[in-house]
Structure formats: structure tokens, C-alpha cells
Length: 138
Image 1 (cartoon, rainbow, N blue to C red):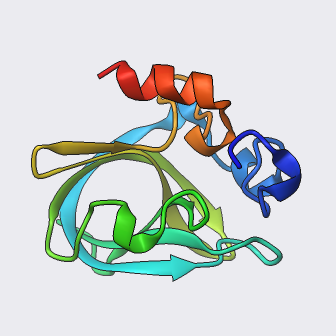
Image 2: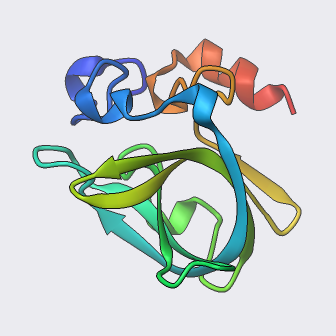
């Protein structure tokens, strides 16, 4: 499914949602996962996996968009409610809400990478060969 833009459900590299990701504005944050959810980031998109993360100094939990559900289901991302996480991603205003679009999530002694930190390319848009190369780069 990766690399087939027709089946991306709004998650493709040229889709409006992805245009919100600005690789030059990547920020790092730490927090604790309050919930793992399915959300529809923008009208017409297929559901995605999101984390609600309690971040020090923020009143409301931060909504962190991770990836489309068809790429990884909420129960398969590895991150669980209660996990302490270190996030890398960029902030975007989507549907009037500030969200973080994740590139990398560190938790326990593991790491979930969903975008290239260099340019924000989503892993789910890569060819199987590109993806294997990125995931093997650890």
C-alpha cells in the first residue's frame, strides 16, 4: 500500500494535510501518553492514529498525529497509555486545533519513526525498498 497515492486516503505526500508539515520547524517535546486514539485529521481523510500527550507547562494534552490507521493500527504502534515519550515533529493548526505532526517518537528503549526528520517525507509514502533502508538505518 505504501507508495500508492491513489489509496493514501488524504495522507499522500501531495495531499493538503502533508503540506502542513514543515521540516525546518521541527521541535522536540517530552510528555506522558494520556490516550491513544483514532482521529480523522481533515475532512475526507481516512482515520489516523493519534496520541494525547500531557506535556509539562501545557494546560491541555497535546494531540500528536502519528500515521494513517492503514499503515499502523493504534494497537500496533507500540506506544501505550502511560508511556513517557520524547517527541520530534512540527506543529500545525488543523481544523482550528494545534497539533503536532510526529516524525519520531521515543518511548521505553524503542523508537517509532514515521517521517524523515530531514524533509518530513512520510514513511507510508515510500517504496518498500526505501522504507527498508530507512528502518535499517538505526
